[in-house]
Length: 100
Image (cartoon, rainbow, N blue to C red; front, top):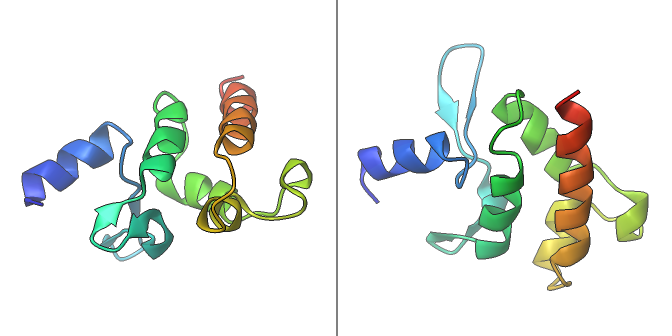
C-alpha cells in the first residue's frame, strides 16, 4: 500500500493511526489481519468517521472491555471470530455519545 493510500485510509477512518508526543505516526497492530486491515475493524472504524476524537481515543475504545461483549474488548471479540454486529452497535452508541 502506498503512503498516499495509507494517508487516504487514515483520513477516511478506514485505517487507524495515532500520533505520539514526538509526532511519530503509529498504526495499532491489532487492526491488521496479516498484511491487510481486518474488514470488521474497517467497518467499525467507519462508525467513528465523524467523531471529533483522535486516534488514541478510538484505540482506547477498541481495547477497553465492554459488558455488552461479555467483558471482552472489541479487539478480542473480533479476533475470536465473534459476530461483528454487537461491536458495531457498541461503536454506534459510543460515537453518538462522543458527538454530544
